Image 1 (cartoon, helix red, strand yellow):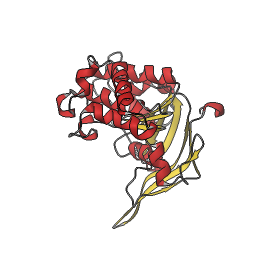
Image 2 (image 1 turned 180 degrees about the horizontal axis):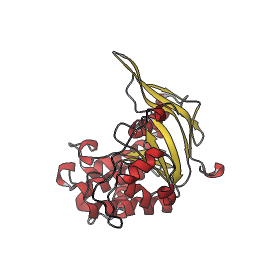
Image 3 (image 1 turned 60 degrees about the vertical axis):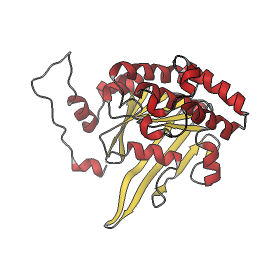
Image 4 (image 1 turned 120 degrees about the horizontal axis):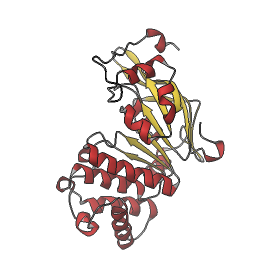
Amino acid sequence: MANASDTILTVENMSVEFPTLSGITSAVRNVSFSIGREKVGIIGESGSGKSTTGRAIMRLQPPKAIVKADRMQFEDVDLLKASEDEMLAIRGRRIAMILQDPKYSLNPVMTVGEQISETVILHERVSPREARERTLAMLGRVNIRDPERVFDLYPHEVSGGMGQRIMISMMLIASPSLIIADEPTSALDVTVRQQVLSILDELVIERNIGLLFISHDLNLVRSFCDRVIIMYAGRVVETIAAADLDQAKHPYTRGLLNALPSLNHPRDRLDVLQRDPAWLEN
């Protein structure tokens, strides 16, 4: 757990439910965790509730979603009681979310520079000239060559790796306290992925902020994060230091690890993950 003095976000017994024709479906069940000035990973299979957890913190669920919790505290804000106007002031300014694929996250009819500048103008009420200067500086900070040229490009004119760095620029330009990164590197090749991770790592340390890194890649989270939260069927089954992931105790975490190929320990056949119905009750 994060030190109390450095805690940015505290979530206690959060559940997210969706009404369906056949009744209420629980996507997240009694999830509790805290984040300080550190990199915390959430891992699990598709459908385990990772992204739903991140979106619930941002209050970006569909209108019919039911979010319950004993506590959802972000710095001095009670996220359960915050009005939509208060959340509009928090999103992007104090909590930023980096999404999976910039092709679907950036506005196709605005230049990337206009979109990044818009964030600063909206949240900090600066002049267009100052917003442009800060945008160019931020593009340079995420290792984009020739920011002046890139400023005037449209999203379809940039590569996947550059698009992701543009997304990072947009999310970080207002200096948030917490970043929620939802599979930010899954659409990138290995070399570009490492560049993006290095940029994120440097910025988290440099700005002394918190990062919630949502992924299904165990090896990536193990090497990049400080702590790891493992989710199964909407529940947290284990929380462990990333460096100690090989010593995980829960059979689900052990099953995920055993299903990974390893060059150091080659096997003829990888293990198949066996699920126990009892995990849904505990």
